[in-house]
Image (cartoon, rainbow, N blue to C red; front, side, top):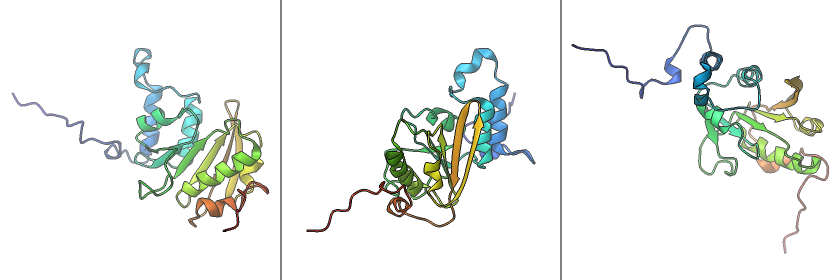
Length: 193
């Protein structure tokens, strides 16, 4: 007897379309429906599902989009991959391996001083695609981001403070972003011999 065969290898999240429902929204909604015994299937995340949903859907990310987890321990890599997002290597130099740039960078200050954080933020912004967004979680001084051009926003969710910067459609290099960093954050310029 003939039975229909589902080819799961060919089915992608992009092919699951329901009119009026964002594909990532559909997948995030499935996280809520897990049976307690199957929770090992879903990677753990320090943020609640509601906060994660707000972060990802608020920035209109869809499966296949490029993102960067710039946390020291890569705490969001597994959940990003689970959701079908393409995760860039945080140690990769912009433009060396992939033609595209991430649309979204999620980072923590990791105990950096304001000067260090400003330099690091400039590097992350240099990797973003035009119109991309950088989100810092629990930055001790959210004003570090406000020194850079773009639309800045700060909000609190689940006891964490989130500061985001969405950049314009103009592409800038990390060196150009350094010019906007905090005074004194620029690396010393050594005159040519």
